[in-house]
Length: 333
Image (cartoon, rainbow, N blue to C red; front, side, top):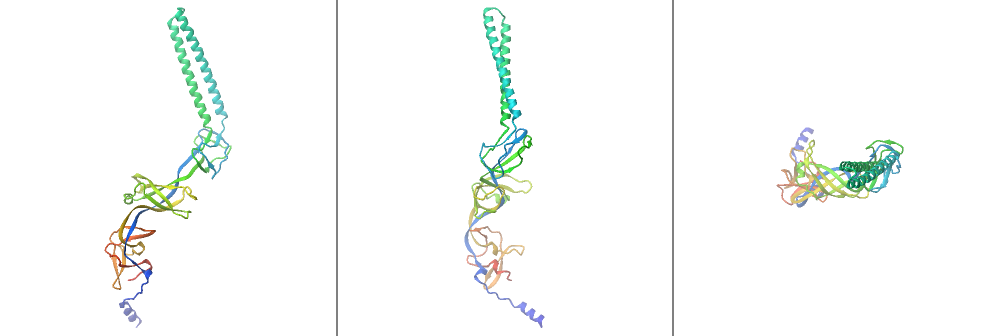
């Protein structure tokens, strides 16, 4: 008897009572076209302050989080040897200059003697050559002095930009080699985000379009602008890299994760919330209430977009005002 009752129950179609929350109406809406993006926010200007000469590091006072200005001295390298080389080059330049003076006086004397007929023109030519050689030696000594001064200047490490110290990699008294990183500096006034999108999405993305980002740790959305688009497709992922300019704001930090949408345009279409589109069959469909019964309508393509912050989906083949089951209605045969 119980089996027979169960069979009879299956033959009887169930009756459902739908509330206002269980249905949505097909409406003609203006949908904001967007491309989803995600990635890390990076400071637009960063710098690694490196040692340009080898030696013992001195004068380190800055630590992570300290502010620095462009041109500010942040460290020095022991300059004892560099000072001595500058003095040595200066003395050599002075010596070369005195040789130029001697050669010039000799040339002047020989010119007077040639005019008086006491010496031959060959001696005058020799004196002229000696002066040219002394002048060349003097110029070489001055160049060596410039090199020595440059080496001395390289013992002073300066910040190349305004910002904050993000990493201190050595300590006072350590001996560093050439190109050893001493500090990393980050400018938090402007940021950039690199996002990978598909080639199909890249067709609609243009420089200057606006984007809205949700950055981890920040309560309010951040407005960004597409600043550059990579002309090449990435070899491994076959994606296109898009770069967005993100303004600095309170709480913004280097390396924070962000996600959001680039607004690429708008389209007007008959649409329902994306949540009411069902995907438990090979093709997406919606459940439409027609004459108090449920009909499955398969969706063939159609635009997607946002109404405010809610994702919407165009429903081709339906009429404005038709009733569609929402996600809250659950599964109904």
